Image 1 (cartoon, rainbow, N blue to C red):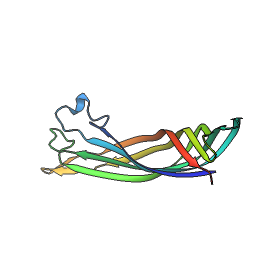
Image 2: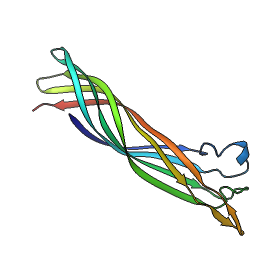
Image 3: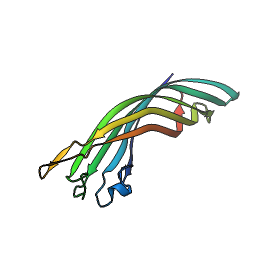
Image 4: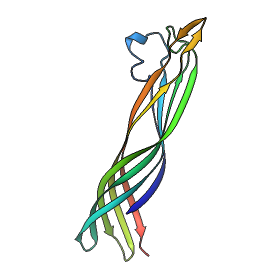
Amino acid sequence: MELDAGWANNRSTVNPVPGTGSAAFVGINPPVGTVKENWDGSLRGRLGTLITPDTLIFVAGGLALQQVELSANCAGGGLVAFCLTPQSQSNDKTMPGWTVGGGADYKIGSNWIARLEYRYADFGTFAQQFFSPCFVAGAVCDQRFTANVHVKTQMLNLGLAYRF
């Protein structure tokens, strides 16, 4: 079994948010959305075989966690009943998922081991509704939209370990 944890500052911004930049929204300031991955971790089992006295190939799989933050902002000033008022909102969530992968360990010295490993992880969908109805000049405007982000990662890890 292996347990690992990592931190990243991976961020992706979409401008405009899909579904808000079509011809139906011409003349508005559509919302901008950002997805940020902060940290992840996994608990995996490994199964492998020696293909030479110094080389182990393996497959691995198990449970994974990832902390994800979704945010959206609307600059305001839209010409129709969407994004009329400036708004900004974010929400984060720790998402459970699964991971699978494989790789190779190679003994490069008496106690040194080098590793090359590929991993795929899937955390499902993070659905978040942003904004609330607003009131401008006595009228109700509906600025709500829902972001549905399917969170998955692919990693290529290079490692160096010392065996005590």
